[in-house]
Length: 337
Image (cartoon, rainbow, N blue to C red; front, side, top):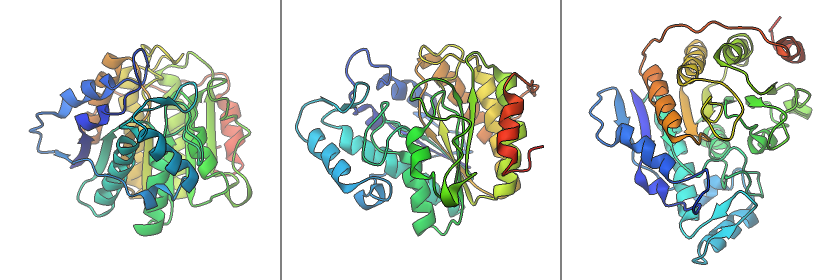
């Protein structure tokens, strides 16, 4: 059983005209689930996140500022890319709360996996700063909630957005209880995610960055997921896997420079799910980027089929310049070679 959050309420975060992180993203995705009759899919109502849960990852001053600006009745630019509109604060609370609710349902065994089609996205949001279309870091909040309140000892976060999740990395950079794994175009916005960024202090080695040059395709991505992610998850043994599911590495995306196909995203999800089964950990996916509306809808639809147990033709892995460096960098901590 898959739990899916999909609701037009997430269109209420108004980014204005000509913004790539448009409410239309939710409108397109909601057509997949609006009349769900699939017995393998359980539609889950959005849940308003509690401020005390948001404060697990964000400072009080920052949260209060977003609330105040949203309540001003005007749209305000928090940075050159990130808008706070009159409904943004409540919508962001709904996004964070809905991811937490899917985590709760998955850990209690009511669903096998979850998919949160929510916005605003979250992985760029820093503890005290909005950034890159993101207000509250949905997966970071859910990870902290799982550890504090749901009895999970270790959480793995997997991020396949084309942009590095700097906010998520920063939240757990010195933490050995939360592993952060990312594939991302590099160099690219936001400028973080170098191979040398592997964590600090107790968290040394628990940040697993896999920076990729532009133009990487399905076979290249799958080489990383099969030969880096899978053994890392096996060794880490998480009790929960959260996925920052950004689809802007798609070959048709107007922002990214990668060549991943819709079937490629399904194949990536298959590797994640296989690793999750081996670890005995439920998975919850939270929407991040993806700005070609047709490609986003097609990719999410195929990922849902994977989460339902559908098998797709295998895509071969292919080594690429830089793959050996990724393996060597992380083999100091993980059994990769």
